[in-house]
Amino acid sequence: MNYSTPLGKQDACAWGNSLSISTKVSVEICRALRNKQYTAAKQFLNNVLQYKEPVPYLRYKHNIGHRRGPIGAGRYPQKASKDILSILESAAANAANKGLAVGNLIIKHISAHRGPRIMRQGRNYRRAKRTHIEIILTEQKQEKKPAVKETKKDIQKEAKT
Image (cartoon, rainbow, N blue to C red; front, side):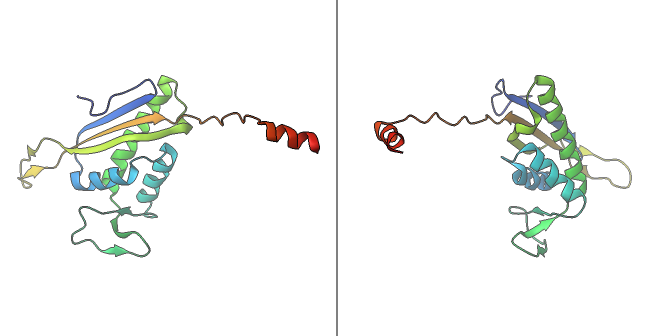
């Protein structure tokens, strides 16, 4: 598979190919998870699975009822959330295997693409939905505070006191 984002030494990735979930729902979940920390994203998906927090629908929101509060249109997609959560955990396991700190991981790249359309047989004779998911986690660098340079004024103030 081609990487849409170049991988570095501090990156870990995981893919889900030809998952039987809706592409439109997956796009909305991926948009909600983008640039979040791993622990916050995992908590968000667990809340969606427990019907505590809806996924906000911003692009594909036609014929969707609104929720109370600032979220607007939203739903609780169970099947897609469960599949994306398993891929997210797989990417975190890959990061841990690579030696990265799991507590400092951030979702650098997450995307959903339409997969192949296969024909079903029997009573449900139509095309089945398939979706590709790719997730890239990166380790957040711990920012070091720059050393404070003492100026002559600071030294004189300390000498006076």
